[in-house]
Length: 115
Length: 115
Image 1: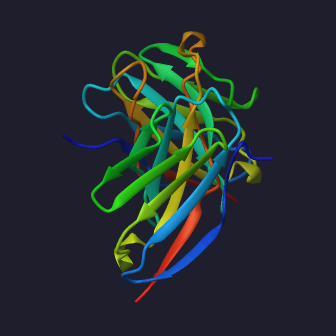
Image 2: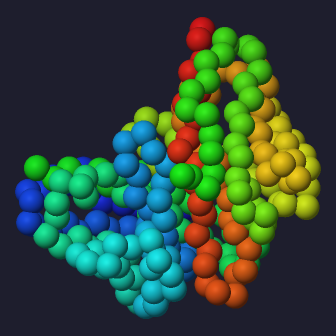
């Protein structure tokens, strides 16, 4: 059973370009979370999705950022018109259970560098 | 400031015990977690504790929870060089009905194990 898969591992973009980060949850998991980690900091929640639905996007910047988790295929975190401040590690996590005791399994992250 | 606070750095000698501390602020937290992050990797769930427990032991790991003081600790017995990593505590807050399910992470404690 493969873990949470994220790609690419490293992504370099110039200011103003678009970044697309992909996350395939563990098999059987229908809950996906995206977190951002700045250097020397903890993870900051961005968005929580279930298949075809955004459940909680309270941590997502209002502009330029969007996320989806389609019925088929991976979850995508999309950042339009990237700026240097978007440089960070972006982690995806998935879980299977609902309710209390939910365990999140994390991918290895995508390191986004904006030049 | 952070809702979940940890000291930044801990250094121990191989074979000693390590104690990593964490304080949180939300009394409605239901589950508290410890994650380990090795360089260039995602977060690995180590253990978790439900808020109505005060201790949980899992092999070399012991979690202590003082709910009154909102203090959580992780003790690693017989620390090995392979335990060198960043350790994050995280809390899950209550009220699943609102759909708010995200974990709130501390900034992490870097554990360095000296041979």
